Amino acid sequence: MAPISSVDRGAAEAARRRAEAARIAAQAQAAAAKVKEKAARKPQPQQTLTAFEGPRKVGAERLTGEKASPVAKGPLDAAPADPKARAGWWKQLSPTEQMQAVSSDPKKVGSLDGLPASVRDTANRQQLKNELTQLTAEADKAKKDYLDNRSLGDKLRDALRPGSAADEPAEKFLPKEKQHQLENARAVQKQLERTEKEVGSAQLLVYDSAFVKGEGRAAIVAGNLDTAKHVSVSVPGLNSDVRDYMDNITSDALNLHKAAGKEHGEVATVAWMGYDAPGFQNVASDNAAENGAKLLAADVAGIRASREGNQPHLTVIGHSYGSTTASIAADKNGLRADDLVLIGSPGAGSAKSVKDYDGPLANGHVWSGSASRDFVSWLNGSNLPGDPLGQDPTEDLFGAKRFTAEATDRGDKSNFEDHSKYYRAGSESLGNLADIVTGNYGGVDSAKHRYGEHDWFKGNRVIDPETQRPVS
Image (cartoon, rainbow, N blue to C red):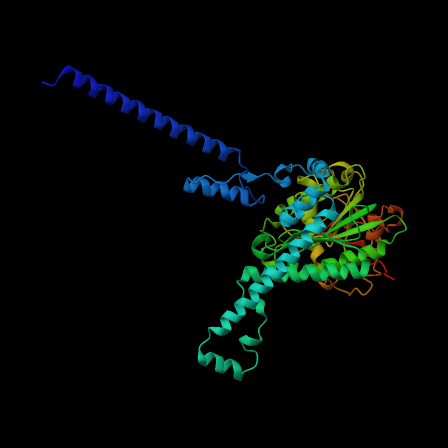
């Protein structure tokens, strides 16, 4: 048995070692705390995300469980949803913050209803430039890759025959949707340059080349939307899209801008290719008018919000199926127009009369112009069972003010040609449109309404007094 003194010395040594171990552990813990504290005080690099990337990052974090890096708050993150509130919010940003927003996310800024047209124009032009550069480069690469990867036999055949793959435009080698986007971008760029040349001022209010799988969405302003006393928005009809129809709707806006002149104040005319218009094959069954009506009402509300206390006199002009779209916007979506004009209309959609509209539109500010030989304007009213596109706004029962809109070169029978002459320079229709847009109502030449008549031999039919009126 060990002596008592030896046991005491062993116990004491063990206690000393435990105390030393505890002291070392405490020192290590204190050192680690200091390192952690120092790291917390050190600024961490932050990643700036656009309004579109933010939700995607959060979604990835949920999937992987990996914590995302802290995201720097940008000025666009605080943009209100309401266009009127958004207009005030934008004014409160500093010039530096506004410039940062445009440069960091031009697509987002360009789509914000309520911002000044000049700001949206700057952003949309930047987005347009970016897309032209990117898509052109992609097209060139796609063509080069295709040509490089051909077999020797294909290369020999292409070299010996005209119209080979080597002669095809580069965009033809892109996927169909991207091909359409590039065509949309080029069409918009061309019409912007044309408008600037003819009027001296152009703004790109709306631009989205990828809208509805490449159908596109755009609105070009002839004039200055931020300062004009009178503003018109022209809505096109069937088979219209950005790449194939932007030149037509821009021509309409330019003709109207010239006809309106400056006698009654500054005018801005908007060529609005802002919805997915249907084709002839699905016009009676498609809900394009309902969807387009929402977009039209939202864009008009954005114009109103951007002008705040300096409101313009605003006229919406719907041509062909665009008149159906515009009428539904006034009936169901609170279209904030001072005047509504329906030309060459196949039907007013959901509205049975002007009393279905709100505000001034229900009290003498709805107008209709239909050429008596315009075949499309007879596809409605009492002429077609069920009225799939709605009531004819030129008939007396609807209650609109009809104005003269006959083509000077009209024929003896109904035709499709007169359907495209409402904006023709020097025409009855264009002169009346200019007077309505500028508020010169006394200058509008009125026409007698179409009316229903019962004939014992021919049944119910519609009579158009304009058929017999001489046209100078």
